[in-house]
Structures are given as structure tokens and as C-alpha cells.
Length: 387
Image 1 (tube, rainbow, N blue to C red):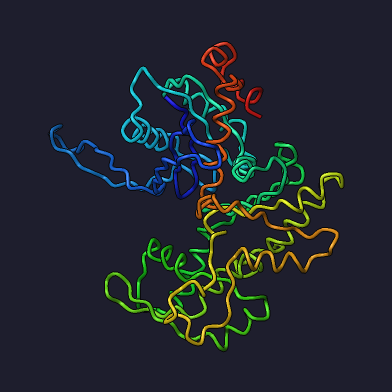
Image 2: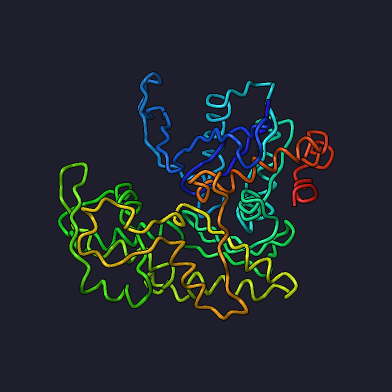
């Protein structure tokens, strides 16, 4: 049985086998995407008597919050379902597992995770590596700078020879969910009589979010952005306005979110600038954007009927590179262009793919935490063998 690779985010769980019979760059992704904000039913006994009378209470569980596991019971239930039912693990014959971990994961969470894997799931081997490193592995790099825009956080991390430069790395407690909430606020303002479910706002964000060519163009959308209409599944019609542009601009102007921080490009430049000069060129020439928000497209990719009178737009990567080109020539980040044979959704699944590549190395070469290692040392062994 091949190793299982897990990338647990605040919105999605990405999990599948790391296939050993394909080239790492073409590894078959048996990826199961589970929405993390799932409705979990807990059956409770009715306290008024009859033990045979049951009441079902729906509870919204968030196993992962801002990148870190918070509800361990929910995570255990989710993994048990996926590993044993969907992936076909059998009790008593569990395999090896590799986890992609977010930047700055607390030691206590790492230890609790390895403890869960060995004591509850009885895995035969365990390994963990940081998402920002794995994303670079996915494009064949061991050095570079990763900008990971997740559902609940943004991580910016320089990586030199496979080692994260934690002192120069930055984490921001904003992400895709905050952009979704921002769009919800704008839609509520322009459509006060319509109640829009947050899950529907998420879909609208994916469809309409885009970037203006620059800050000046964004400011012009206030006057020349046409009123677009959208029909919701329940038949109600809403106006979108410039909400899509505001979502894209918020990453470059965090003040839109009410946050006093530099924009994402300036944050990257400041992060790279704090690394020793001997590694500067490698980092600048190998900057990678990943996460679902990074795949935001220009509106030109939409049907022509949607483009009438729309201001010019850019995809997030294009706007990012355009802003980066305005930086001083001595420190001007350049985005990695993935090989053409890589899947189109690489930016969304890069950490998982990098984990699948790494799993083909660490487990065959016995670099992982074994059952013997765990029994001898306990959960703290994860700090010695995985990082």
C-alpha cells in the first residue's frame, strides 16, 4: 500500500495516495476534496425519558481554523471516514501517511497530530513537512519564496535549500474567507432586501472576483463600472457592481479590509530583503503563488456577453507580477512559470503534489517516524525527524 498524503486546510481537505509508478511531476492525484465546514450530526438521547427516543442535532464543525487543527474530534471523524471508507484502509493493516503542515505550526499541534496517527489510526509510518516547502517541490524547486493565500491565512516564506527561513517569514490572519465576507458586505449594501447565503457568496466570489490593472484603474471603477446582474439559484436577481474588483484589490490594499498592513507584494519584498544577500537571487527568481485565491482570473476569460463596457482587468498573477515589476531592480520578484505538462490547477494543489513527491523519497529511504521511533521516544520524535 502506498503512502497517503494529506493537506488539511480551513476549507478543504486534500487527500490521496502518492502513486510510485509515475514521474513525480505527473503523479496521479487521487484527491478527495472534502468541505471542512461540514454538517456533522450528533445523535443525543432525549432527556425526558424513553431511551429509545432520539433527537438529532445538527452541529457545524470546523476541524481546521486559520490553517491549524482546532477540533480534534471532528478531524478524527473526518480522517476515519476518508481513510477507511474512501481510500480503503483496513483496521490492522494501516499504511504510512504524510501531512502538509502550515507555516508556524505550534509544537503542541505537531505532537498531538503524530500521537493521533500512531495511537488512534495505528499508522506504520509518519512524516510531516511545511506547505510552503512542498509547494516549491511541486515545481521542481528547493529554494524560492512561497506566497500561499489560503482560506483562512496568508503565508509568505523564503525557503533556502528546503529549509524555511522562519525569521524572515510572515503570516497574516486574513485569507479567502475574509474576502468572501467583504464581498458579502458589498452585496448586502447593494441588495438590502436579498438574503444571500455565505456559501452562495463564495461561488459569486469565484465567478466575479478579478483585479484592476492598477490602483488608479481600481479607483476609476467607482464611476465607470457597469451594473451587472446575477440570478441566484432561488430565482432572485442581484446586482454585483464593483464588488469583484474590491475583492481583488483588497490583497494589494489591505486597508479595504480595515487592516493597517502593507500590500501583499510589499510584504513579499520586505520578507525577501531580510534574507542574506547570497540567497537573494534564488528567492527573487523563484517566487511561487499558491492557494485558491491565487488562481483568480481576468474577466477576459469569461463569455463575451459579460464583457460589455467592463473596465480592463487582470488575473491575480498578472497584477501581482505587474506590481512586482514596479519594485527596485535590485529586488524585483519574478513568478515561477510551472512546466506546461503540469496540471492547470497546480496552484490550488501544489502542497499536496509536493507531498506526494516527497513521500516517494522519505518513506523508501526510512527517513520517516516509524512505530519503533514513536514507541521509544513519544510524540516529541516528530521535531527530530520531520523538521
